[in-house]
Length: 276
Ligand SMILES: [Fe+2]
Ligand SMILES: [Fe+2]
Image (cartoon, rainbow, N blue to C red; front, side, top):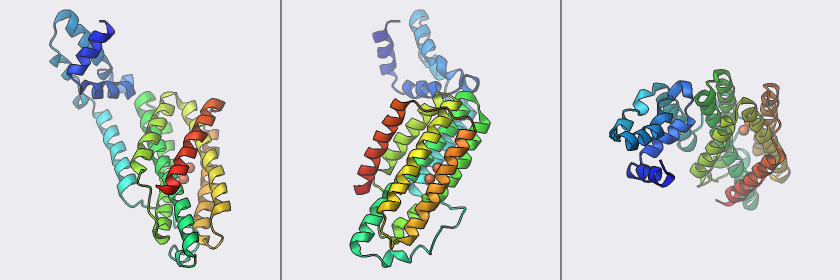
């Protein structure tokens, strides 16, 4: 079938794009029928098989994909709209103490910096959940998926701590968190699609960049904001450990252009999140 004929067939049934997208991310062993939808459409044009035949193959045939998608959607909604449940106590002094010992300017700056760190943790949830999803959907690698989920759990502590600091400082999360989440999720899926070693390499590079960024924030946070500083110091140590763990699990070196692109994206995100 010519390309424009194929595009016209798809345009008549736009919801086929969803199934095709799912077919793209699904691993053959989990969901082979979905990736054949395009072939079915072609067959229809050749042998006049009704297009409705394509709909016989839908998500209802893929309970594993259904479960994965629902689990991932649940995680996204919890990250964006629910208070994060921390497993570890917040490091440092009680959260409310230092919010009142800062002057207005210091409190504003500390709030902006912790908003950036909170965005980073929202993105960490998205990256790890996308990579866990991808590990299962693309290659059926359950141990890698569990590695990603365990790291995401520790990142949940960071999410809770930064949320608490934002409240104590009278600040707020970024209004663009759903966009940050979606973008990071897409990047995580892309990394997962490239295989186990690339996926782990992406984790190593991300965690190293976050570690450097947190060190920079420690230099900028008001000295009197000991609560935020304690949180950031603990997060930095955790991120460094996440990088080491991913390295030990077999991460490959991320190519320089990818590393530079990641730095540029992170710079854009931190600049915008500082304000919005
Ligand atoms: Fe983190
Ligand atoms: Fe981390």
